[in-house]
Image (cartoon, rainbow, N blue to C red; front, top):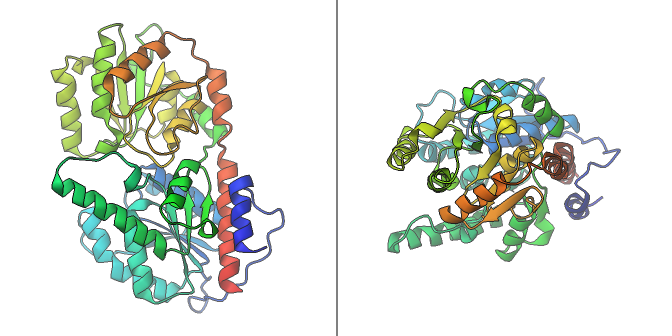
Length: 418
């Protein structure tokens, strides 16, 4: 089967061929070592959807019979404990740590040397934050037989709302759009995490022969088991006011400031509480706390930080809100539905519109706190509709997603060694 036909099959069926052929190994790393066929690259092991999916992809590749490794610049973060059974190669081991952008720049030479020495059949840059550095290192390595694949994990710069105003901001935005065109053009293949994102990539020059769409998926059964665990907080007790919940890193992308303003307006109409699960910079936490205090709802906001089991809280919330300015494909959205919790979400690029249906949620414009407040109040007055939410989440299964990546990587490795 040619790689192009395999990519078409992935987009339509997202499944692994029932009897995938054995993959020959030619890129030996040295005496007694197993050749790496698939290297999955992320910056670190922080609690994020990109890292969680990189771990899943590495396991799917191994389950498909490929010798797979997780490549990280730094082996730190909340998901360090989740790497059991996955070989992890640390690229910047022993070097003092810098802020992520600078750290990644100074890691390019080391990453290039690693590609040159290990010569993986496929290097998968699994998140947008590493694409430019992966492209530079791949070019610097001179190892053309290693296929560089980019997983487009977030909306394109051309499709996202402006992050700021002014001449400098416009220049930064145009530069980001140009950089994306260059980096995706340097890749041997691109995987989009939603169909909307795939359409955007096609419009911006990524040809159909190099592009596959593998929608994100979640483990419905595991979420169900996690959701059954107790939520250890008095706000989730029977008879307490309804809880509105949001999950995500404290960052401008998630736009929790708009959510807090919307909650403050809705709070004037009926009692409710707001919980935000996720870590982030202290400055962002302080900003959100100050905003809540200024709006008079400080006592009704709990910034809960990272929670190892967010599903126990989401399942007991009356409503989940996704306030993002942009996404790639939101796992948080699908996971909330899998918990049986209805959602109010911004109609942000990309992927949200293709997940959320009227039966299980409402869409509002990006950054519109008044519309968000109205939608929150409307949803809280409706029946929960947990069965419809779970049924919709079942359309985005983790098994389908993992079979898609396994098929893609198998085809890419076969192309490399033939």
